[in-house]
Image 1 (cartoon, rainbow, N blue to C red):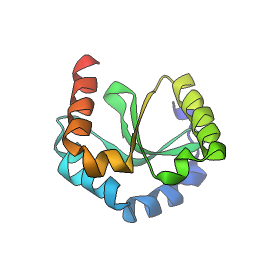
Image 2 (image 1 turned 90 degrees about the horizontal axis):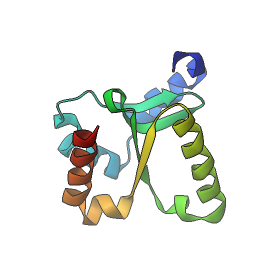
Image 3 (image 1 turned 30 degrees about the vertical axis):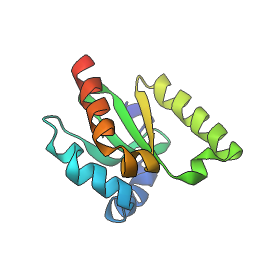
Length: 117
């Protein structure tokens, strides 16, 4: 994946890491940080910055706010997912509502995906 690494995105990724959304913080501190694998926050992959990335599984975890459900943004997300999949990644998306209302189920889904890989 190094050939697609975009160094220019690193400052943006660092800023996003420092300014995580409430849902990103909840998932990070209460689930992902305790996993027995390395999880990267706001990781640069090619021309994108992904919310969370588990390299050992090539798993991208994205949290989607309400703007992701507007038609124009949905199309951008589909293109982004296709690009990341072309790099060999699997992409899983959870809505902020999933984090807020079904947090345990989200964590179980992530654990199950890790155990499949």
